[in-house]
Image 1 (cartoon, rainbow, N blue to C red):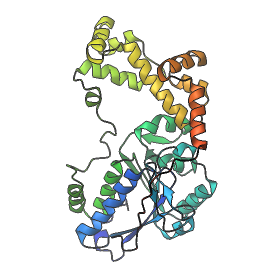
Image 2 (spheres, helix red, strand yellow):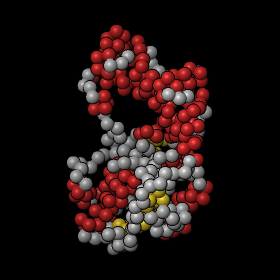
Image 3 (cartoon, rainbow, N blue to C red):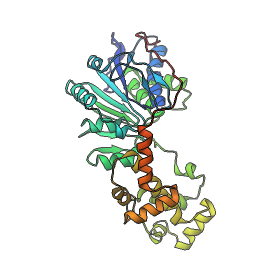
Image 4 (tube, rainbow, N blue to C red):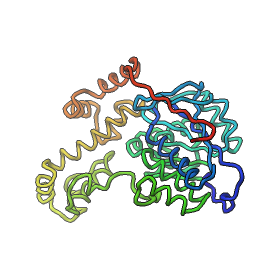
Length: 348
């Protein structure tokens, strides 16, 4: 799907794509990808793509929003598809299924094009399918991914296409990924028409940032303050001293402190600590790293100091945070409504 093919628009047979869904997958990423394919068929008045939903056992799978998605086939059906997209969401770092891993490795050996939406890169990496490939993942999972897979080249791009592997950051970026593939196979005009149907003002480039720019996130326009916060975000494992932060943007420490008080209603130290403790929480929830390793990765020199700061800020210790997660994972899910989403052969 993602290899340029000048003759693709004249092909007689539609491209066959399998969506493999795992528990807690992201519904918005799944539907954004699928709807781009549906609109490609509709706007071209031809069946350019067909798609099928597959789960490990062929049974319905619950998305992270609690809705149930019906699957058409079990995992054995994956062998029939040249393109397979793994759809994941929250808690992908906990997903360990050797049967699924082995099947995806088999697909790779057969030359299938394999992709992942949202946090699916975690699962592909654990299956050994991203070694030597460049990939991306949702910005919230970048830190935990790099800690768990330090030898895999991961970026903060919206999506990455590297030979027969493709990954995207999730959310609406799944539509951008599909539009990229549609443009390669069937022309930029069709992709632009689909974007208009989505009410998107443009097709985003993979280099567009995943996150809202700092200026908008902070709600401020002071360039030096934005630059300081950018340095803080980039240096959490080895925090920079306030004097160094001020020096890098051409301010005195006192001027720096005044800027933080005026625009952010806090001190540089408290703001920096908040960034590091929020990163620590993500690592505690998204990895199996030891608490001391999380502390070191977030710039704390001792577990005791980290634990005290974490409790003061989040209201519980790092170990209590982990226990709450383990209890939640073991609890029975609450009763939720179900939505049947059937995917017939005609992909209406």
